Amino acid sequence: MRFQLLGPLSITDGPDTVVLQPSKPTILLASLLLHANTVVSADYLQRTMWGEEQPATSRAALQTCVLRLRRLFTKHGVTETPIEAVPGGYRITAGPRHLDLIGFREEVRRAADVADPESELHVLKGALSLWEGSVLANVRSDVLHRDEVPRLVEERLRTLERACDLKLLLGRCGEALVELWSASRAHPGHERFREQLIEALYRTGRQTEALAEYRMVKEYLHDELGVDPSPALRRLELAILRGEDLGPADDRHPAGAAYTSAGNGERRHATAPAAPPSAAVEPVEAVHSFTGREAETTALLERLTAPGHEPVTLLVSGAPGIGKTALARHLAHQVKDSFPAGLFMVRMVAPDGTPRSPDDAAAEVAAALRDQVRGERALLVLDDVVDADQVRPLLPAGADGAVIVTSRRGLAGLVATHGGWVLRLGTFTEEESYALLVAVLGAERVEAEPEEARRLAEACGHHPLALRIMSARLLTRPALRLADSVSWLAEDPLARLSLADSPELSVHRVLGGALDRLDPRLVEAFLKVAAQLPDDFTAEDGVRVLGMSPVEADDVLDRLADAGLLEEGPPGPYRVHELLRVYARRTAPFRSRPIQKV
Image (cartoon, rainbow, N blue to C red; front, side, top):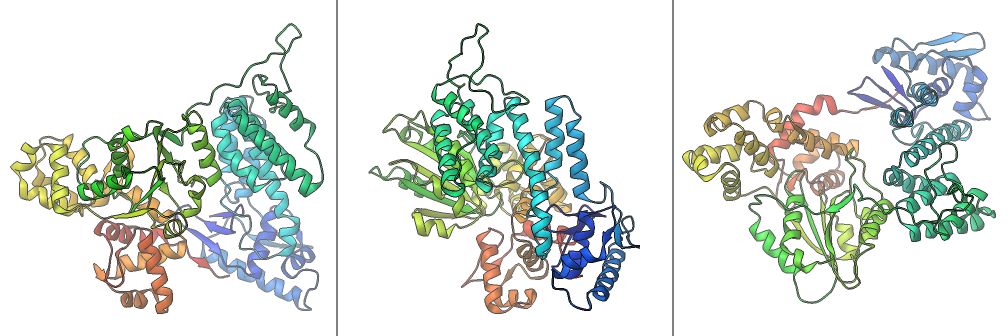
């Protein structure tokens, strides 16, 4: 078992994590873990638990809390990190395998001994990945949050700062920008982050944005702190104003001097290198063998090509894997002649599943559009949007541009504030499913077994992603009969609906990613509903299974429907797609993340 301090205090064995409920024993455990392998005095422990004004019974209550923690350890099989009573107080023994804080510090020390910048960065990334949220978010101790948490946060910031230094040194300025936008906004008084951000902007050819960022930090420091920017920041501004080449980012002084020597005592003046294409913003790729969605395509095209030059916003929502992105890409290429400035796909979620911040996305889009000819229209596809706040800074797309937003959620708040036209995608019709099989496998093969093709579509739940995956598997096995594939798929649909050479194309992975974005309580509610209720169920059924009041259950079911995990809803019945139901039943035992009372 392993303790996690770098986030909510919890106990994990890998697959399952128990988040401890806020309580006095939780404070006690945090206090011991923060000083693992050392004796922590009883006086200090009492102060962290009750503050300066301790009850007369605090010593006895401390012993009771120790007993409760030992019982918790026994319950969860914690045997390698015992709590010992020693003269003067208590001690808990832990190593890097048992406590993430120790593991983090060991990795940081190991990185400092690595000579190769690439290897050092790799080690630091591993160390930073151990942080999983706000430190001690479930530990209600003013003493710990005043005396200990700031020190831990500073350790993380120093490590992140060093990682960004290395990215600049290695020429990965675009990658550094992603971290620095977030870090500089979360910690506006941390000058080094602002300095790194300005340098990264300049090195990627964004001189105007770099100077704007300098003015912003100068104003903040003056208004909030009453100080001027540091000499390093002022030198950097001067170099940018002069258009000087900063030269390679120096390992010891990553922000660089104001200029570099040309070898003859003269300064070299050069513009910063042009920005490389952003990993988050790229041209919209065409969709090969797009089928179905004729009515939806016609309706959306009418709005994209309507007379006039007002900005257009279209929202395409629906369940995970239902084909939102494919439809958006197909639409974009249908109207590409109307948008000479280009078609741009903006990935609103990073490959690791982390939502991109609004500032990051806005900066990347601004960079992509900076060469746009005045008066020319551009079309943006904002793909996989997590919530309305993530995209509000990107709307509207210029005076007469267009935006297609895809999201698993309905984003009613975005529609309320910015308008637009909404389309909720469902599963394919029987005809659309059959047409997709014909388009991929060929008419001869499908029409030789038409009934089996329809049974296969039914086995896939007419789900576009499932049909695409199954079609691809059949395409690589031309001798496999459709009839045999139906029974083969039915044996284990989750395992069979995946591609070995493209693990991201997996129904299991897509559905799991959808649940990972939800609040744990919503996940728990969904698993109950999917596992215990029939195919069609009412809000009253939900009240019974969830054990909530009608108002609470209505809210939970509405949020699950908004997330694309339930179909239909009031005034009609709710429905869980069969693949989601299979996934829920398969993973429910492993997905529970209980809130443990201690």
